[in-house]
Length: 163
Image 1 (tube, rainbow, N blue to C red):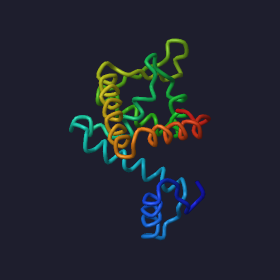
Image 2 (tube, one colour):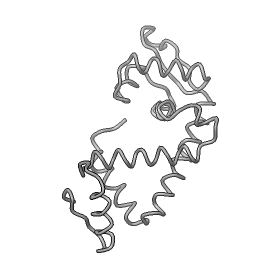
Image 3 (cartoon, rainbow, N blue to C red):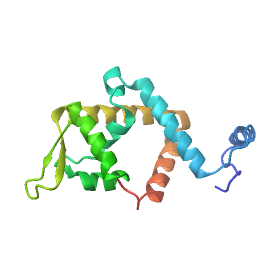
Image 4 (cartoon, helix red, strand yellow):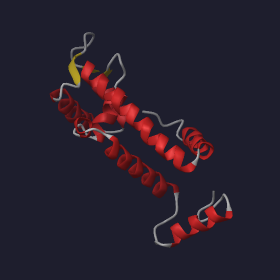
């Protein structure tokens, strides 16, 4: 879809043009992907029980990035797209919460290896269930066909950028 052009029914096109016309912000993918991300975060805050909300979104996403067998802190930092020091601080916080364990690797004592604890696994399972619930709300709002097409398009466009 070209910038500023809508597609869909005439009523949807008019609504889309009106929504864009009320502000002077640029109409591009960065704006709308950020807006959808904020919307999902808002949905998650509404759904999350207090104990999960207390962990925070960044920490919960980091927990999801740690594979079942564990991972080196350096590789986790690369996967998350942040510095090793930033990941180290997040891992320390998660370790303090009892959600991960870190220890020197058995094969190289210089390497810090991080694994989720059973409590960390439970947080990941609960977070994924809440994400699915929030996504289902959005899917119902726009319709299954449109939502599924959007998700397929996002997967295609983001296929080379993984975490």
